[in-house]
Amino acid sequence: MLESSVRLPVSPRAGRFLVLAGVFVCAACGLVYELELVALAAYLIGDSVTQASVVLSVMVFAMGIGSLLAKRLRRRAALWFGVVEAALALVGGCSAMALYAAFAWTGDQGEVWAGGSRYLLVAFSLAIGVLIGAEVPLLMVLIQRIRRQDAGGAVADLFAADYVGALVGGLAFPFLLLPMFGQLTGALFTGAVNALAGGALVLGLFGRDLSARGRWVLVGANITVLAVLASAAVLVDDFERAARRAVYGADVRVAVQTDVQEVVLTGGRRRSLDLFLDGRLRISGRDEHRYHRGLVRPAMRGPHARVLVLGGGDGLAAREVLRHPGVRRVDVVELDAGVVGLARHDPALSELNGHAYRDRRVRVVHAEAFHWLRSARERYDVVISDLPDPGITASAKLYSQEFYGLATRVLAPGGRLAVHAGPVSVRPRAFWTVEVTLRAAGLKTVPYRVGGRRSGFAAGPDRTSQGARAPRDWGFVLASRTRPVLLRAAGSEVVRAGMRSAEPTRVAGLRASTLVHPRYAN
Image (cartoon, rainbow, N blue to C red):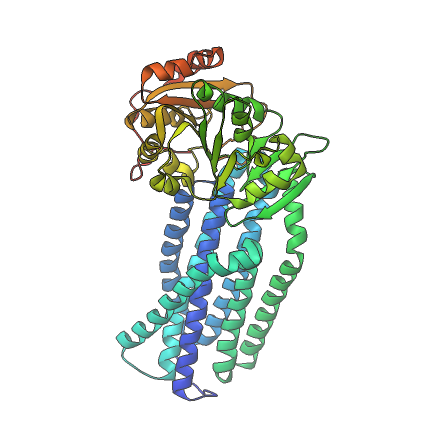
């Protein structure tokens, strides 16, 4: 039999308002946990669409399980709601640190991390979903005990507060928590708010109905949870430094979170400079010159007074462009101003790019390449697409038929387009999909690859080259509207050898990738 009366320290009207306010806060915290798991999983594992689907579907399923389990807890709804909120605050608040710790200290095991990380992600999604799902049935009992009303009205009130809270949490995560606290501290802060809200609601409003033992259990649980979260918050900077050393090595020189991504620079003094973007090795000083020469030089065979570089905020593609006489203007379209700032001012990186940004011919536009091309009106002799690997979900639209259609519009007559298309040896299907997509956009193509890489540079979805199948080549596609122009541009021995090397890997029967049908898979 459910409890049917409650002694409130406030009027029933005020008590009902406080319960709905508690629903609002707890719902906001719950959605932050969901978004935190999605964001961190996409960063650590890659393929944001898959990770979001896993987290959200597992969590919604677990919420149903939690609702069913809560039926057995309704006899002591106030006590169990307090316990559920304390557990949710602890699990949700610590989830980001736990995932990041597993990433940092088991990441060198390659495939072990790739599989184990998903199990850990599912485990947190299940646990958080079960706890969130248990909230509403218990709150339904509590609000009915304050003032009896029809079930439909009570459910409407609870869900209204729940959905508005979810809206606030969903907006707070990207616009407030991430900029102010970052992923780890943001999750810990959310957990603390969750614990305080749940504990204050139960102990402050329903404390008179709890036994002395029940009150002490809740007080002890909440103090313990808050102490754990506070201790973690105090140690989070040391934790991040230790984790970065485990991931990137001991010589991390720069680690910044820009508005777009995490940027880490290592080396640059006694060893080669490495640039990591969101945990993925993007530039290695050991072999970046082979990549950038392979990408840029073939496209520069022909008129090249005006050159457009899409991506390439590190300045290395611009460096190769500027080495050719006759270049009058280089436009670099780079979304992340933080990367460009490092390329301008970091001593090691600016030396590596030949101080390209000091050259008056170079102009930087901070914009997303797809949207910038839609409004571009100028024409270029050469377009260099120096963008992240197509295997990264967020980059798929930059390798779509629509994107290449926009790039074709800015090509001058006789212009050439050079595209980085990912490693051929590891992901031949993705490489040849890029080639098929360029042809679908009306371009003639020359696919080729350059071997000899000694690092996991531009490795795409994998954060480093530590996996069992680290790439040892780069794949490129040179394209133009007409075959004669293309053949003149592809006349170098490097491209001819690269064509012969790439052709045996060709995958037949591929279809073009579009915005609504992306065809690049990890």
